[in-house]
Amino acid sequence: MSSSGANNSTNNNNNNNNNNNEDTKTTIYSMLTDQPITIPDSCLFGTCRPVSEFEKLNCIGKGTYGVVYRGRDKISQEIVALKKVRMENEQWGLPISSMREINLLLNLRHENIVELREIAVGKSLRSIFLVMTYCEQDLASLLDHMSQPFTEAQVKCIALQLFRGLNYVHKRFIVHRDIKVSNLLLTDCGCLKIADFGLARQFTLPNGTMTPMVVTLWYRAPELLFGSKYQTTAIDIWSAGCVLGELLCHRPLLPGRSEIQQIDLIIDMFGTPTEKIWPGLNDLPSLKNFTLRQQPYNNVKQTFPWLSNAGLRLINFMFMYDPSKR
Image (cartoon, rainbow, N blue to C red; front, side, top):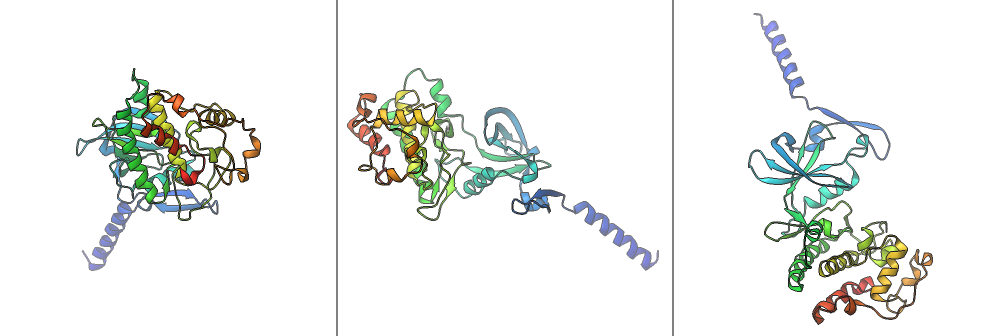
């Protein structure tokens, strides 16, 4: 064979190899220009493992942001949680809530925060999974199957873990914004882990503005109900107080069916807020939408007659109307 033929053969082989090794591409649409952009999948997924390396055992939950499966790592045989990212509109790529959750969880490592171990991918954007630590149940399902309320000592143990997890994220300027019993997971050893960071935000300025329409209604702080866009870690403290009350009462503490009823329930429990105890109350944009019933006292002690003085003080501090004192 001539050297020219050999060179042509070599070039053809190289071209074939290049074609075989060429990265598959995905077309997404820019959120800024609404124009299609074609990029290699490796830029989207990096060195993520294929989801085929995991076996889905059963579905353990469905939510706004996706479906969660109990799964097994076929290589290590470890049981994990596989959270499938819900693609509302594939042409827009990953939902912003999922991107925020991935970005935050990849940088959070604490025993009371659910661990995002890695991301597993299928053959397209329709098949992206977050591989997370598996927890046997959440507090909501545990409450549903308990015949008796938690004791104060048990609630204290759970609360301590919740506070440790919140302290960790708050020190990193992160507000979870959706603390509730269904987002608090428990391992078989009783270790609590805060989960679902889809609504979480990281702030760099103390007065960064955010939308007030967050946090499940029953756990929503009054400043959010009154339309405040200046959110602090205090909204998580209010939500955590609602969780503690739910554990102690064995029922939701403030189960409003509307924002108006939610405000009424808060006033029933903690009295009517005033400008004197909550400076800036009268400036909140949505306050004018509510007629606040006058009640000068709170009913915390009547709601928790068995609770120790230390427990009552804790509850009252967590439900301070003034966010700066909460």
